[in-house]
Image (cartoon, rainbow, N blue to C red; front, side, top):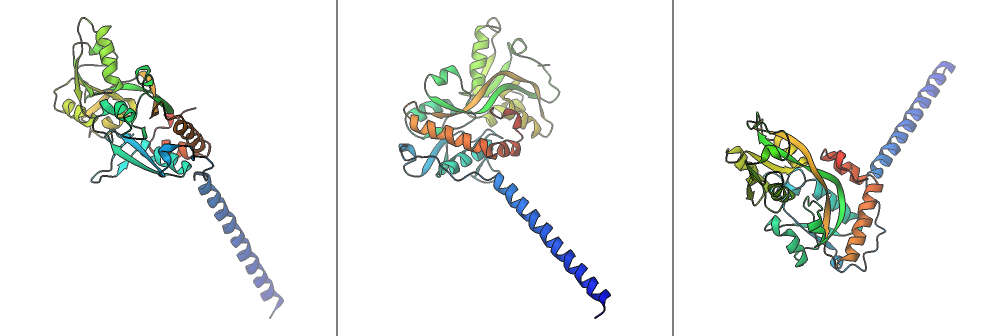
Length: 290
């Protein structure tokens, strides 16, 4: 074999070995990247938490509030921001998670206190009234109220509250928005009160707007924005960001051990990047807790 042939073979072997090294390095980088988004193995001691003794966290929720929680179209599978966060928290605790549909969102706090669930997680705004009854683990930065109207905004609604006085406004029963309207009727709208129309769930309230039976519908900003974006151009947001309040996981006041490990699990998924990944998946990065 000629020296030239040997030289060519040597070059070829070098190229192959170099390419293999590059691919191996890239694979290692990919593995590291994937590992960075995987929750760390749990180091949280749950042995003293009676609610988790059976290896399961039972969560009460009104699963009709996309993108926070809803049923996947055509199925009974819950999906949404709360669902993904709850699964990540449960994984950090080393337990399974189960969501149970509440019978009535307005009674969700009472259901928790009567021990129908271990916790409640359902885009629940942390308010002084609720804090008087249960404890919270905050997991979502303050969220304001949005005004959802028919396309074209026929009533010209652009602000709270004077523009809403005297109008028919829909909202889900038991929500922060109902409390806001009731407070407005004692102040800004006391001489021309809002006609508050309450419905068992948010889709029913939105349906009343689409049928022209109310002038507007109030919901949390992420939900109102999601509804407008998925309305085929039939609805729009007239105003957002009014009287913001954070979301929290509701825990009974006698469940201090459970509250403590939930706080630890939330911190773990924040620290390992899982929390940010979930918020990004649902386009809610602006509501990340600090």
